[in-house]
View 1 (spheres, rainbow over the protein chains, first blue to last red):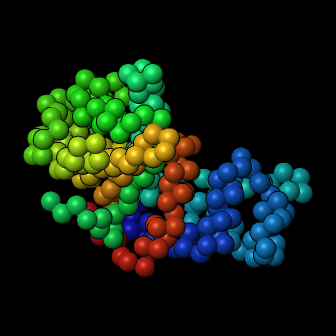
View 2: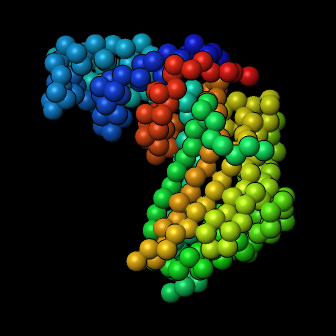
Length: 109
Length: 159
């Protein structure tokens, strides 16, 4: 069961724009290191590490140590409190628009 | 039914340009047979305000998979809006109660028609046992984070 506190925790974790940008970069990559995340972020590696800590606590990212590196990846379940129906329809309508495009080509070549 | 987007809900927006006249797209949006060829086959659809119709989709738990719709607004070649209701109190995640509105807006452009879909009224769910990983859908949620994050100050009413 996800409780109200969990939803709030997730939203709090994502309320910070820099942290949100970090999270979105993790989402867009399969796996990514702190060094890569810091590059071009405009903030220090220490700041990035702090953001990663918050994202981990909110259950939004998980880590995998390998040798000297730690690889971060997004944890899809972490966003679940904000997702389900909405995710479903986000995909659904995009697919339907593609189908509509095909249909229109057929009926109005 | 107040259609205003409430501050505690979220909307999905899909906006695209099609190389066809608004009249052609309008036909695809308002003919039952054509709706069935790109969206789902409706039962009882007519482009008349007040008409109740249904779509049948995948059942989930206590929900039989029926989407109950009601035509709310019809402006020929410009705007079509219907209520989109489904789900069941006994479910969470996919299949949870859904009380939303789908609005299509058409506007003529130099190259055809801009079609904008707004599916509004999503309430933050209160748990996730039915959650499945979906790459694109998930990214869609991420794209909506700005709005979600802005709402974090307002306490969520969970049922």
